[in-house]
Amino acid sequence: MNLENQTLLENFRRARDDTSFQALYRQCTPRLYAMSVRLLANSQHDAEDMVQETWLRAVRGIESYQQQSKFETWIMGILINVYRELMRKNPSTSTLESIPSSKQPKAKPSQSFIDLERKLAEVPVHYRAVLLLFELEGMDHKQISALLDISIGTSKSRLARARQWLEPTNRSACSQESSS
Amino acid sequence: MNDEKKRSYLLRDLPTELKPPDHLEASTLKALNRAHLLRKSPARLRLVSWAAIFIGGFALGWVVSLAPQSTNSAEKYLMLLMEDESFTYHGQTQAEVVQEYASWAKDRRENVLMGEELDMSVWSSVSNLESKNRVTGFFLIEAKNEKAAIDVAQSCPHLNHGGQIDLHPINSH
Image (cartoon, rainbow over all chains, first blue to last red; front, side):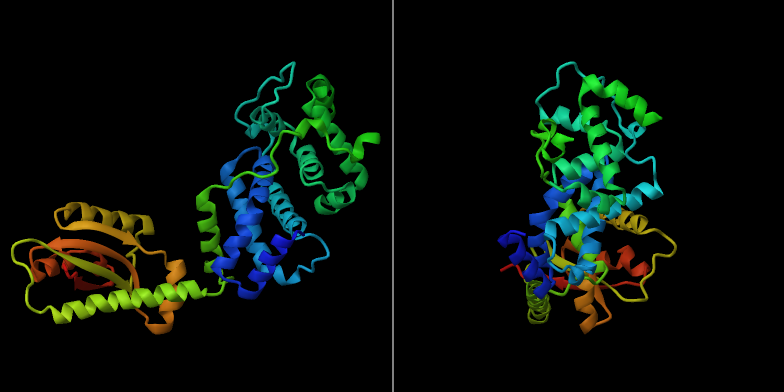
């Protein structure tokens, strides 16, 4: 945990008031929100609910945070749990069918991150979760497997398939594997 | 797999952070306060103190200015909408009650200058310490004199729901 986050966290633990919460919230939420939006395939409303529920649980359990892991990792773990519960309750959330526009993959990938977001949203959700945690959050397969309650081998294979999905040339083969 | 540890070039352009919508912070704070997960901050207590002074000032102004200050122009009054546990929606939803108040304000637009509903998730825990009556909203109205202002206040649907209204003239100086 960086010094700034640690100070914000200690301030909040001491005061537990609106002001100290806002400071911590503003520091951590952009990362949580980015993950939520991408996990839920750009469903902004669900992503907001997920972030809010994450903070409710985090504040409730803040005393149980032991600083053995980074605070950002700890709260990201809470967000992933909220996400998994959402998936269990509503498995159709964030599937390919719920994505408004199904774009044909372009022969040459665009460098624009807007296009990249769109392509990411087309990656099947189980693969996408592993990809985001590995690529953007820098987690290793051991951490990912613990968070998602999957084996390390499954985490590795999902990462490989997510990468294949983002590569148009490999996509059709991957699609067949995914649907089987 | 050799590239397991490497970050893929595929997501290199993707920002790791996205700006959340502004309203998310307020709604999260509201949810935390509603669940009593946050303590009252000194800033909030200061706000309440200032509000007490502010409202007290209005009350004092009302007592001191017994004589009409102006007969040539309309006077402004603050209608403080208060409620306790006897307040009822009469089976209406909150949205319907808000709409009812809005319709009343529209019908009385020659008198009603503005109105707001207060965020009770912030105020309730404080006001409960002092009184069962809580200020839940206000209207700023204009009337030619106190009697006319009382007439406006008495027509407000807040009274039909069991609420109380405190009416305070605003000093023009």
